[in-house]
Length: 65
Image (tube, rainbow, N blue to C red):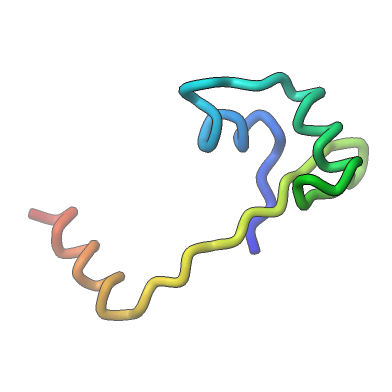
């Protein structure tokens, strides 16, 4: 699991139709979105996609070409 700050989460997952940071915080508070507040900062929990070792190697090769 990866923890993203709210602003980074909005950039990555809501760039076409951005929502406010307060909306994301409300979604976390209501349980609609997994996340937490740590040290005064809000973080969204994002599942990391599972990539096999072969797929990872192929991606590296494609990038290097």
